[in-house]
Length: 454
Image 1 (cartoon, helix red, strand yellow):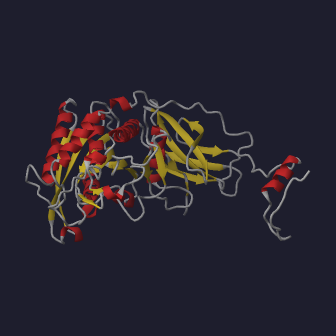
Image 2: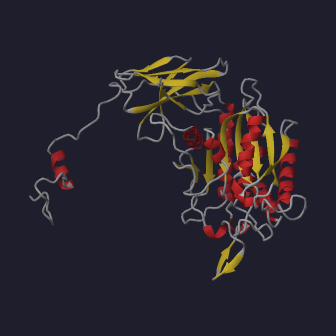
Image 3: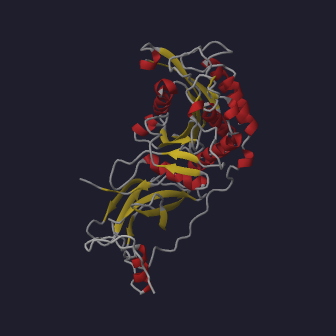
């Protein structure tokens, strides 16, 4: 019987083995090469605590509220950052007024716990004509209940400014329904979903201006939080999250995160992205291991550049006829960022993903600190860490992954800070991390173990 046939001859020194030849070898009982098993008996059997009860459900997201928010913003004609801040019917000040009204309505139902802040500042740059111009951000702030964690903040943000084709055109219509009325609506909806809850850390629901002029609002948001003495636990930026154009919908939202800068660890942004995916599920989140779309940027970037955990949500595939375009019809094609192109079912899922991620992160203990890796030229990896006392913490999950695997797995559990030995697991073949776990099942962002270099 002929097992293999060839249509071309192979040189005698060729390193390539035809697939049929490999099949013959395997059929003959020649085993494929395997890697050593680490540890030899497999990882310990660990009972993993379930996540916290009371998850936000998709049914709780109000699509009518999302629609009403964007309709109000679009009614302002343009929300260009250089348009009027004082005209109540047209310009960016009109957009601000709609946002403040929505936040105040939510605050009224929060028992006085949610506060609304209008943060005014000035900027100068190429996209302001090199002139000093006034800008404003709007924040709704829900203080954390735990004195030890109340100065840790988790942020969701969308930008409410819009633009026409010409970045300096502050007079033409620029509806900005998707970019970024959608992200603004998601931030406001997260406030509505979470404002009546109680969390260990503080939540900030932000809407910012000046994004299209140079990420000014996002930069100011970072500076504002730092000036108020907050530690940024995580920042979720929602920008262009309102449409799902491609055939075969529904699709997952993309979640962009920046690369790490050290060989044996990863960035805080990447760890935040992993945690969000774990909370919301792979069926809902598509991890994109880039800081942002190629050559572009968003309001999470000032946080990333400051070494803080920040990520960006963006719809699955963008339609560029509906971004950064003055509304018009050319060659039978409708240009412009109009409400009719939005998908509120998709936007509702994005809002739920953001809200549930914020909820779990704000319920979690503080992440461990001083997480170091040792055990070089020994058969076992050793990980050490510290953490403050916390009566609501159950302990710590010891995590590991192959260096090529994008996701962590739980290796073991420790009740208190220590030096944990990954017995018979090479320091070379895996990455390691530690995260805190609350008695309620809420988990912190993972902190990678890095070699202590003197």
